[in-house]
Structure formats: structure tokens, C-alpha cells
Length: 80
Length: 406
Image (cartoon, rainbow over all chains, first blue to last red; front, side, top):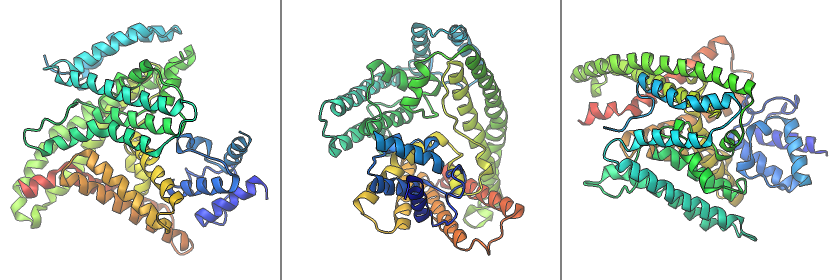
């Protein structure tokens, strides 16, 4: 699976919504798909899956609010 | 002479804008007059804290020095080579940072209290900023702070007494650069609009609700006290709405001033309110009401607590975990407001509302097809949220305490 598919799988698992990721540019916070609790679950799942560390301080909602942006951020953190 | 609370009267703005005009002319011409900025800050702090018997001012100075030594020491610990990032060093740094505030809050409970070493207007807001810095230093997000930068961030006078609560890295971005002419003109425009709206909110609408109506409704509610069970006559309901309107317009007006004056200084201090009475549910409400405070609680208490519980696997069930988080967050918020039963109940009430809201959202998710969603349900949701919020403000106002216990 590529990163995008993995992220969508995590989001589906956390939110229990089947149609998450159908629009990768959807703002997940504005549309209420993710709340703070779900966000932490997603971050923890990503840490386990990709071996990246995302401290809460570095978690800027505007940088993580769509599937596309999540894919970019994970890519950046994996390279670092 | 006595202390002058910032933004407390329309004439304050005339003097303030006169004092700030050299800074504004400088920014318009692409220059930041740092020495003059410092001079203006000193003048405003003197009028706000040294006007009376100077005890507030002395407290402020001691407090700033204390927090500065603490934050810079922690930074030194975290940035030295092979820093262990020990949890307990972090823990005790946070405890030390909040101790002055804790003392100030406990003080009213004691007779002839003298334990509040540092009592001054706005201590809470400066403490939020210090704790934020310690947490971000722990995460390695803040790597460098000069003593001067620390003081400038904490003593940024437009927001010193009641926020909005800015974040260090965001603030640095603004003060380290000079906006372009275009950017600054745009800032002046939005700033002016915010200032005008603030004047309308605080000195007209807030005045009508708070100064003209509230005392009348209060007297009526107290005089009909014996004709209704628990003293809850219809006038208490009137008090609830009048107080809620007063609270919003007074505080939102004040926050608009703080953001407007920041804008004039080329700083984009975050907004505190975003049409809170249009919220669809209580979660939505906390994303719109006193936003810098609720985001602070979200980022530095709730999310961190969730992370901690999830990693240590302290609680298995995610619903229980989220609810424990809400209880912790809102209890802390209640205690922060003050050590009285009605602030604590206010906190518990909101925790309960959040828990109920989450349960409803889960139910709605499972029964998507059978629950109608249209213009009418939307209006009903707004109406219900508005009333739940107003009821929480009635608790918060302490009026029930007057009604029942005094």
C-alpha cells in the first residue's frame, strides 16, 4: 500500500466512516470528521505505521487538515 | 493616582493612539522603532500597574523575573548536548511556573491571606504564555529564546491584562519583521474596523446590557425570590439572557480592542471570538468562544493527556478516555476561574455537555439514515446550544449563589 492508502485506512479505522478520503482535499477539521481525540489517535497510529514522531507542538491544524496534506507531511517527516 | 485598566474608557484610546502614533508612522514607512516601542510599553505598564500603591507593579516585575529564570533554565537544560529530556524535570518546571497563579487563586479562601506573592491583573494570561513555552521547549519546537524576547512576549501590552493568548513562535514571526507598506495598510484597515466594532460592543451594547439592564433584572429577580420554588422566577431567566449578552459583548469588545491595537503595532494577535451564538453544538461553541483559551486547553492539556493515556494504554476504551479528558480539562478550567462552587459546577456542566454531545454524535453516525437533517433541525440545534450555553453562564455569573446562599 502507498502512503495515501495507508493514511486513508487509518482515518477509516479511527472515524468509522467508510467514505473518508473520497475527496483527498476535504478539510477534515472543518467538516467535523476529526476532533481532538481522533486527531491524537491518528497521530499515534501514524507513529506506529511510519515510525515518525509528531510532537503536539509541531501539529499545526492548517498543515494537517486534508488527506493530501497528511501525505505531504508524512513524506517530509520520513525523509528527515 | 490609581491604576488605569487598559481599554476601560473611550478616552483611553485617544491617549493610547497618540502614544502609539510614532510607532505607526514608523511601520508605515517600513521601520520598527524598537527603543520607542520599549518606551511606550513602559509608559503603559506604569499607568496600569504603578498607579496605586505600586504593589501590583512590584509583583509584576518579580513574577516576570521568576518566570524568565525558570523558562530560560529549562531551555538551557533541553538544548545542552545529549539532553535527557527527563519527564520530572519538565513536570516540576510546569508546577513551578503555575505556582504563583495557584497561590493567587487560593488566596481568597484564606483569612488574612498573604501567600499570594505575585498578585497583579493579568497573571493568568502571562502564566498561559510561560507554560506554553515550557511545553514547546520540551517538544524541541522552541530552540532559542533571548531574555529580551521572553520579556517582550510576556509584556506585549495590548494583550497583557486579559489576552487573547498568543503563542511564542507565532508572535516572534510578527515582531521580527516589518510588514510591507501594503500589508501594513491592510492591517490598519482591519484594525480600525475591529476597534470600531469593539467600541460598539463594549461601550454601547455591553453598556446597555451590563450597566442599564443587568442591575434592574437582578433586583427584580431578588424581589420575586419568595414567590417561586427555589427562587427561580421568570426574572432569573431574564437575568440569564441579559447576563449572557453582557458577558459576550463586554469580553468580545475588549478582545477586539486587544487585537486592533496589536494590528496597529504590526502584530496579528489571534481573534478570540467567532460568532459563538451561531454554534450548532457545544463542541462547535468551544471552537468559537474565547478561542485562544479553549485552543490553549485543547493543545496543552487535552491532546497531551490523550497522547499520554494512549501511549501508556492507561484506559482501553476510547470513549472513556475522551470523557476523562473532558472532565479533566473543564475541571481545571473551572478551578482556574476561581475557587467557588459555581465556577467548579460551570466546569462540570460543560464537561457533561461535551460528553452528551459526543454520545449524540456517535448515535447520529450510527443512525445516519433515520435522523432527519434540514433547515429546521439546524435552527433547533442552534437554539438548543444557545440556551445550554446561556444556562451555563447563569451558573458562571454566581447569581444563583446570591439567590440561594446570601
